[in-house]
Amino acid sequence: MPTSLFSRAVLLFTLLVAAATTTTAAPTSSPNCLDPPTRDALKLHIARSLATEDSYTFRDGFLGFWRAKPSEDPNADYNYNNAAQPYGITLLYPRNNTPEVPWEGQLADIAQWTLSPNEVVVLVGCTPPPSRYFSVTPYLMQTSSGARTLAAIADPLSAGATGFVGDSSPGRTLRRFTRLNTSGVTVPHERRINHEPSDENLGLGSVGNAWNEDTAILISASPTATRRVANALIDVGFPPTAINTVGIAVSELGSQLATSSNPGGEFSVYLRNALPRDAMAYLAYENSPPWSVFSVTAPNSPQVEVPFSPPNRIEARGFDETYLARALDSLTEAAARALRADSRGVPALSGFEMSEYARTHSTSPAAAAAASPPPSFLSIFSAARPTLRRRRVSTYARSMAQSRPAGMACITSQSNCGLGNRDTSYAIAAPFFRLPSNSSAVLVLGVSHEETGNAVYSNIVVNDVSRRLGIAGASNLGGASALVDVLGLSLPADVTRALPSLYAVLVARDCSRMNTALQCVQVPSTGWPSAPLDATLSVWERAYSTLASTVGPPVAQLVLPRLVVGESAEATGMLAGPVGAAVALGNRLPGAARRAAAGAAGAVPPALANLIVNGN
Image (tube, rainbow, N blue to C red; front, side, top):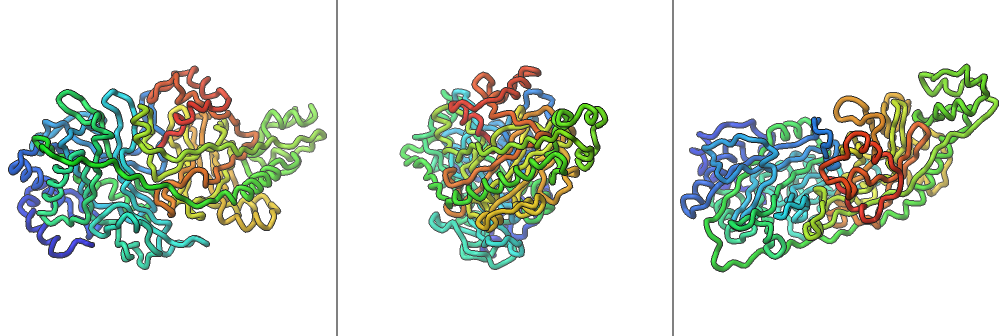
């Protein structure tokens, strides 16, 4: 239930004096959420009351947003970041820090933190403005033995929507879900899907509103301490139905908790947000995150305490879209045939011209000697050529994919889960490739998982493999019908009927050269972010939250992307070099050795496949 006016008044009155002495921050854009002074005062009130009444100790923290930034480290590892998505990260100061004793040091040193058996990490904040997807996910970043795991310890607390009222998408009905309780919504486990919304803000349905609302998240291994903190929140008027608990099961993670004899593992919490309806409102949210983060620790363990049980994992269920595989393959092959047109013709898509070598070697010596590199594809084929050759255009349907495993699998095996999110299924288009000139391009074709119901939001991202850096991406994927028009394709009736569920996207060094209305992802070779002309690139496709279960769709039910690679690009195979066993995660082969590894073609050994499929 939404916070009542009485409860809100109680909270504001209770904290009035403390708020008056708190530094004022920029206000949030939501009238439904606590203002920053009140939220900060709430934190201080709980810290002081628990310290006075129960001898709890306190450490302060905050939530900040991270975007990929240039690094002077040549071995920088960006862990296949989602290029268009910022990440909110919780930071906790060392235990000797207090609100009155500011901490000075590197942010990286406090972005991961230990957790004691009696400690409760508290996040009190305002959820983002309406977006297609957002989530809060707790992670074990590193085990007590030092293994880098980046593994989720519970399913994300998340919400999503297939669109907003007023959006147009033929064949798609607006749907939304939430697994996060807020001041505007409390959702039982069996009611995670809501009907088509009836208002502009997705706010007045049978399950209420998950956006622009207050929420609290408590993370702890101690049920007793968690209840004590929850009661402290409720005592000052915070709505009890807006409190979420992430219980850490000692049976699973007891060895990761910090004690006097065990340094413990390192934890963190990440917030993701994608495709906000109002980009400027979200930018204001990101610039002044409306969250308070802190922890409180009970002095002693209770004599008798029933521990938290291991968290229930939501069963991954999706919609079988494999019936679209034939249509996608037909479209892919038809596009390739059109792009292999007689070399006297003009290619319908820039980036698929004949290579310089093929161009000069498919003409007579006199014609080759007279030819000079033309400024555009319109003049490449203007000279008469007695010897003709079709363009080399290859199609590939060898993509690999993986649903994100439960984090305990990575923790138990001491392997790296790459900040995986169970709300997402990840596909890597095969092969990797290079775009060695400013006129290079490849074509990516796939199924729109939003149209099939297998995602509230999906995208593709182009990555620099050597740094595992997301360069640029595209969402709201479509364009299959536009590809048919551009290439003048003639398709069977069943393939034509499937076009609204398919997408076609160009990946190019310079989209302004493409001379087409097709969606295009530009991969610059200079600036930030960018990838040099000799860089090995990959395309990842993400599908977030199928409506059948709200977690990532089962891979077996998905149709994975296809690639069309012309002569202006270079297919390089699937490469294990950047994340293989010989290269420690977080490090890269230096200089020529790294480039040589990135250029080695060949299939990925099965044992390394799970190392390559990292990302977030």
